[in-house]
Amino acid sequence: MRYAKYHKEETHRHIVKVAARRFREEGIEKVGVAALMGHAGLTVGGFYSHFTSKEELIREAVGSAADETFCGIFGGPGGNAKVTLELILRRYLSVAHRDAPGEGCVVASLASELKNRPEDTRAMIAGKTLDFIRRMADCLPQEAAAQTRMRVAGAIWAVMAGTLQLSRIVPDKALSTQLLNDGIANALRLAAAMENHQ
Image 1 (cartoon, rainbow, N blue to C red):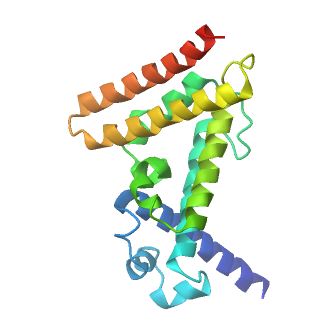
Image 2 (image 1 turned 90 degrees about the vertical axis):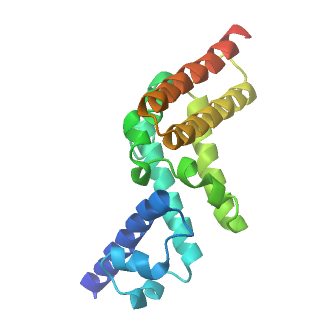
């Protein structure tokens, strides 16, 4: 019984991992349950022993993908490593991140689809996004008011996600890379403007 429970948990995690990648690569609506289970090397009949609906899987997969990005940017499960704003920007707005959407930021990959999901799914990803913004706010000058740091961090996050999306659309790789570099510079200017107005 113990092995059976462990095996089911491992299978569940495997499905979530495969879904998180496929959704980011192809889009939520383009990935059907049957195709997803086939890609995971499983039969479609086993899906409902793990999830009550596709939406439940979407919530888990999107949440898992968001956690992956958090750990990748902030350096660890707890996100407690000391990082600077510039390091965050260079990790997020990197060529490697641009070229690996299946392993990257779920918001940048799926924002246009996530806005149409049920309220509980949107609330989940909104919460993850706020966690990301709060962590970035911690990297801004502590002399500033908490509300100011959150507003600036939110603006920087918008620059980051938007820049990554644009860099993936542009077919010219040199121009795409320039967009990434400009995004880093523009985000740093937002932070510098906050310091100059203290």
